Image 1 (cartoon, rainbow, N blue to C red):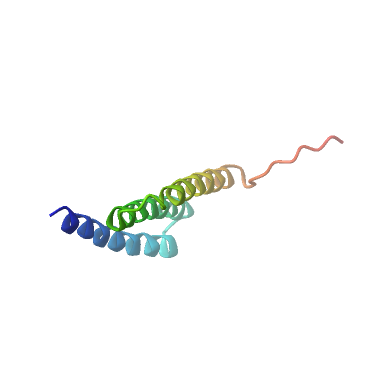
Image 2 (cartoon, rainbow, N blue to C red):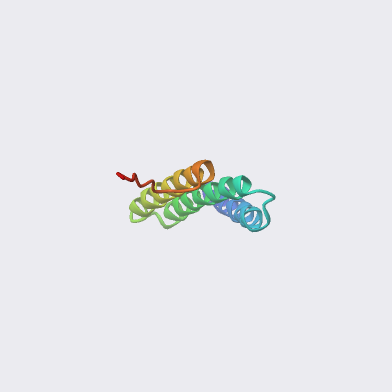
Length: 94
């Protein structure tokens, strides 16, 4: 029973990933694209965790952590770019 539920969760996460990729490509605004890209990162974490459960392996835990960190850093960078127009600010001492 648990395996059927996990496989259904994988199916639904995959379907939602397709919807999110569509939103990243066709989003009406840049902010919508950034939010969809963050949700893609969250879905990748969920899919990787579900595959780890199906395969009964702990090898994917580091990958889950890495995807989560990269998704967070990417979202923060995009938000800063949308707010200020630059990601890395350089001070001029002239």
